Length: 265
Image (cartoon, rainbow, N blue to C red; front, side, top):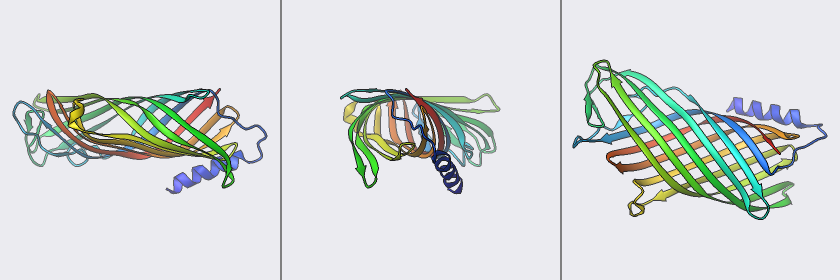
């Protein structure tokens, strides 16, 4: 957290004394680098074989933060709010020598065998943000409102060993999401932003997923003319049961700091 405070202090210091400040544009483009750490368990059943509850850190070796890259494109329309498209991509890779047998997607990998594991994420998001702003509240411009949209997950997990055994599983599903956001423009060049969106989805929806998902972020951004940069923290929670040919139970937390830069027009 000391590094976050140092970066925020640097951004604030750079902003003071500038004469030209950015206003929110109708179109904005942003890229983000998320240093994502994963924790949790995965269980995959297949061909009548019950899978093992696998800790992704201890068993798969996903014990390092990985860099996830993300692109945001936002368009604002008068009276209609803002429409935001996001594309997120990243993967985890790990190598471990098993201390016990595990079963993944119908294949058993035996103790003392070295395995290579991979978990790849691709997520497409389309959000509609609608709300209002109130200038001058507690000395700052404040905006708040709701979020609605859809998120499409494409998650692929693979396990291999030195004996030629290999298994993979894919989770592909769209999710409707709802949430809220709040923005504090502390000055024309400095803003604090927070949002959360997600869904709890029952089996009756018949989308192949049962469980809960949410995605929460908080960030501090410095705006200079049309450009801006910032830091933040993100928590993505995915606790679902997937039933579409292969049954998978996924309970994952992906967390970490991110850095972002962008431009508004």
